[in-house]
Image 1 (tube, protein in one colour):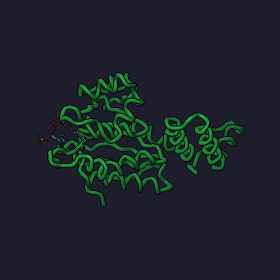
Image 2 (cartoon, protein in one colour):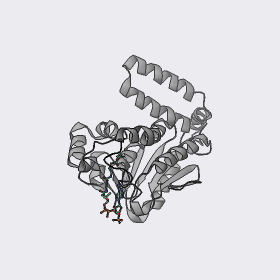
Image 3 (cartoon, helix red, strand yellow):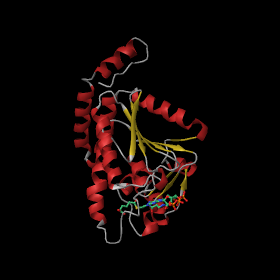
Length: 257
Ligand code: T3D
């Protein structure tokens, strides 16, 4: 069904693999569209409670395929038409999205990593805000996320110098949820994804929405969003199970509803 990505599901987790390894998984328009479709697909499937995005081969993603654009291309249109729908789909996804950063994440590949809720980073991986190296500005929401995550001073440093950031430095900066040794990579990514998938999925979606709202709303309006979120969470089976399990002194068995 997909040509530029792989898609599989296992133990309530949807696995999306960027699959142009010869080009270090550089983006084409088709890949933008297929990632958007795959996220939508996973979002619509009630059995899926976490999504992993990773790269096939040695890279996570090298950003835009530079053989597909020229100085005649209207890059504003490329962003609006190709990248915008994909990145908005990720931003609005109610299910948790884990970036499993197996290798270099450059340009829009770095932006994709930033848009994920978690970044599990292989010890061999690196991040590169490559845009400035070819005379462009970081895009796909890159600076929106990066500045919030690591602060203005470091965001400027990474964006203006365009130098590689190692996995260890990424962890120090707060970009990496955790760094994972190569020999434990698959096992640890699966275990982390399955742990996230076992949590109360509706509450997770509402937590994501609340965090996003906190950046835009005055406090009194934020509290309204919070109250509405808690009203919805309070109606879920997982809330009932959470309280019951607590009172019965056992581990809750959440079902994601
Ligand atoms: O439409 C628009 O332009 C607007 C949107 C922009 C979004 C963006 O993402 S702009 C930024 C684009 N990305 C880059 O500028 C990164 C370019 N790539 C690199 O800097 C390096 O390749 C890496 C640091 C990512 C990896 O370096 P390394 O030494 O591990 O690998 P390599 O030898 O450079 O690359 C391996 C192959 O992948 C090579 O092909 P070859 O020579 O073996 O046939 C290389 O050309 C190809 N490749 C890597 N990145 C891209 C690419 N081919 C096309 N597009 C790429 N982005």
